[in-house]
Length: 148
Image (cartoon, rainbow, N blue to C red):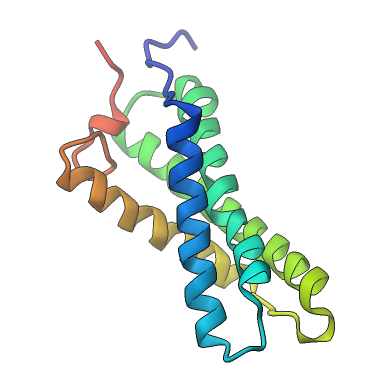
């Protein structure tokens, strides 16, 4: 399928600052709520999956999969949500494995279905922020149309 989608890119520094800041903030919250059961470093490492790897999943969708799909908004949105569901389930598995590396028998076990639904929720919430700032998002369909 020949596509007119514009590839998405941003400076590496911007990506690193955003994704690492998100993981650090999540790490602080999780470590605080765990009352000493999980260290900040372990929580930070676990949070790298949805923050950093989630960014790469979104790039894969925008720059590889999206141009290969029909350009209708419904197909684009359905495919994006399926990608988010699969990624979220995979991240839940990887986060559980990472937790086991850091905490041993006290590993945080995240069911894959919670990871799947949770990641979709996080992405939809992130797109609210994009929409409010008048950037392309799933809510205004500019993120679902071909660029002219």
